[in-house]
Length: 460
Image (tube, rainbow, N blue to C red; front, side):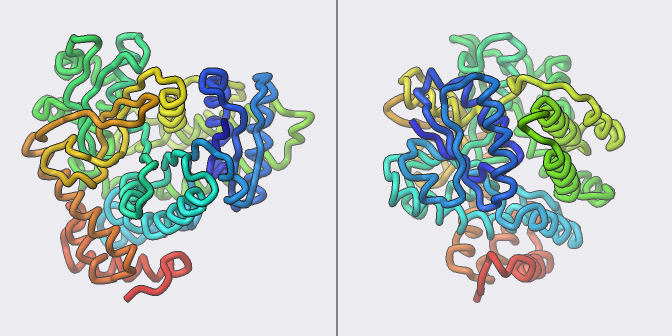
């Protein structure tokens, strides 16, 4: 069985490969093909991935390809994780938004729209190639904004596609850790949209375990829920997706992002450049330990300042920088992130052992008040027969109003991008709860189209 990673020259490739190799015998995996248009990065992180496979003494082949058709041919599963416009595109998205006093973040609000300008056409192109050379393959999209991209794929008729995001399973993961049980033993009820979802219930066997812990400060402080006021969580009686920080603390988030000397994109660009320069100076054949130590230190440093402005316990930039000095070769098993979501699906589809996961799929009646063809983030059951959303029913009024509002924006945004229509793009941003204003939406659209003209093309 062949698994292809589109964007396999990205810095996360060795972690993904390590996770996949640990599961290879279970799923029948025989080849992981890493594809990327950046030949230098593909060679660098591809060779590091091959070193991971060598150390694990895995029989699975780790191959590399620049051409999408060659990489996709014969694939059973494809994971897409690309960044059209690279880090510089992300930085433009952030800086343009912040200059208008609105959120500069790559998946939520106007920054997410700007990312979608570039991501949707790119992923649709890969999907078309996949349909031609491996029509029975599943496509798991992790490219941001994952919900918008998944909706665009479904609208274009690519129905063997799923949007994946580790954030959808935050409650499930935290509860598994708390109770020291396998994550798949937790039956969570997730509903909403990507980066805008809620978990209202979670059970182990027949016992409800989430609701009692919402009243437990110790539990909340041990999870990413610590970025929210416990009163907010208890008022909602839901586990709240961490990206809802941008809605519930909107002005604080914008102020914090504007106060940072560097945007997140600028920080990641600097970290990536330092990592690549450092690895380029190491002979991997002679000094693999040094290369892997530097790589894992980079991962610790990058993760340390994730959403740092929302966490009281986040380290300073200086403290985070010192993490890079700790040269420890890790196992890579500390947390699989999006790789774990994708690999759990593959395991279930191949082995017929059911998996329970929050995914971005067609609604098909799972959540009341949304259309059947709306892509939603919802709990699903996965086995050899396919991927089936769990019936959620009606959303509470407060959560439902926000979800429907953002879904309206998503539909308009996809229509604008598919038609290259400026008026519809402005209407989309005006509909987004983090923009709302015509006087902000119009110049945002103009500036984003100008900044990304090489990707967006000519709009009317």
